[in-house]
Amino acid sequence: MAEEKKAQEKEKIPKMQALYDDLFFIFLLGAVVLVVFYTLWGVMELANLPLWPR
Amino acid sequence: MAVGELDFRTCPVTGLKIHRPAERLIKINAVTAVVFLLVGGIVALLIALTRWPAVHLLPAVYYYRLLTLHGIAMLVAWIIFFEIAAVYFCCTALLNSRLAAPKLGWLAYFLMLIGAAIVAITILAGKADVMFTSYVPLKASPWYYFGVILFAVGALIGISLFFASVVKAKNEGTYTGSLPLVSFGVAIACIIAVLTLAHGAIIYIPTFLWSLGLIQNIDAAMYRIIFWGFGHSSQQINVAAMISIWYLLSTLTVGGKPLNQKVCRTAFILYALFINIASAHHILVDPGPSAAWKVWNTSYAMYLAVLASLIHAFAVPATVEVALRKKGYTKGLFEWLKKAPWGDPGFSSLAISILLFGVMGGITGVIQGTEQLNIRNHNTLNIVGHFHGTVVAGTTVAFMGLTYYVIPLIFQREIISKGLAKLQPYIYGIGLVLLSGGMILAGMFGVPRRHWDITFAATQFPMSWDPTVSFALGLLGLGGVIAVIGGAIFIYIAVGSLLWGKKTG
Ligand code: HEM
Ligand SMILES: [Cu+2]
Image (cartoon, rainbow over the protein chains, first blue to last red):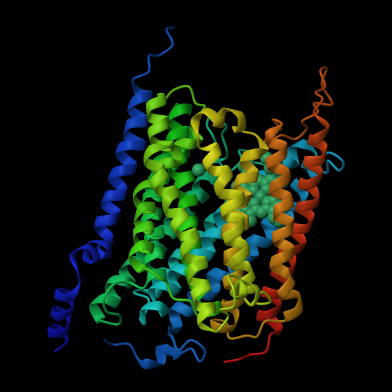
């Protein structure tokens, strides 16, 4: 019974809404944007700075 | 399902099913939050009176020590303990469900409590005069970093519990369809929190080892980038949580329902994707990273997050307007505004939070986040004025407003001193306008933040300032005193209601 009900609901939910409901997917996208644009890009730029000659 | 119905009670006002073990955790986290608000508030008075040149209260050492404590007690302890309480509420009562593992909730609580206590004691003992940013090569005692790490692990457990409880509720079918909007917003806050804590781990663990002497050197520029991946993102947890609470308060105070779920949810998702890269606005004057990196991260992509804030800033008042119009206040354009429940501290807090967050915090933030303008504001009091507009006039006021509902609904006590409660949000709000306004103005004349004596009186070359500066710093001091009075009234009412308020349950 309960499973039948669940299955029906799944069909009713539009695709975009299902995407919005997918918290893990949102987390992944958020992580990629932050880590690629901010963290990795930033750290790589710093790592490639020439050192002060001794 | 082996849960007895004994574990639940039904709220007589809202009809929500409340899971008692979750309720106990909500209570203890909320009470602890208020205790830290008290600590941070006492300290706030002392440092505000130090920045007011006419008073210049504390000696230099104590100014820096207590400034460090103020940042930690407020921005870390008060805000995050309260958020953990809100998180537990949103994954249980709002979903008709129970907390996945209450024991883990207690573990999280004690880790956070012990961590915060270690940090506070280390600061007060004079072993961590590093401000809450602890920029290397400033070095605190290892206990300081250890305390922060314990606190963070506790918070991470709390957040994991949120996700576990949401999954559990879904599986047990206690709610159907999508998460309710308020829980969805809090879920976004939790997503941002995971990203935040990951950056926190990358930076605090090596710094801890460095303070123990196990690592030779931490690069100062590198530290700043990773630290702000943590420090800025954690402010975005606060924004997402605050806005969720705006929606919750609009329902609790006037019975509002979000007008367009799609738009509101899209705005929350824009936060999850684009608000964290704005961390780069803390690095705008650093010589290392390129202009391309700075401009991309603080303008272009980040404006999508600003767009999200604008959406919420219109959606929440619109929700309130529609709800009030439904009650019959339809005359002219503004009857609803005039007849709104301004005497309900929950409602006035909501209104003050939206207005000041947007006008004082938001506008200054967008200005400061622009590379070309940042150079004028960097490290001045202008910045401090901005974030007392966001995290105090915005987040803290919203949390206070919610507390006026948490006390009757969760603690089941009547609010004491209702007349005083009516006034409290206004007193606090006016204090903050003066405090932040004074800071913003002083900063425009170049007055530095984190500075004990801008006149350099004890040096060979005293510095003189435009006369406007003493006016601005006077506003800061006066506003600080008024805000602290407003904060003290809040704490008196909150604690007093728990102790002496009439039991309603
Ligand atoms: C009664 C309310 C408050 C007053 C009067 C107040 C006043 C001040 C003052 C005077 C400073 C020092 C500025 C400087 O010299 O650089 C400061 C810094 C700060 N405040 Fe507050 N504050 C209040 C509430 C809060 C709250 C509720 C929060 C957080 C939720 C907060 C977060 C901070 C932070 C993060 C700093 C910066 C610390 C640092 O530079 O390391 N404040 N505040
Ligand atoms: Cu920031």
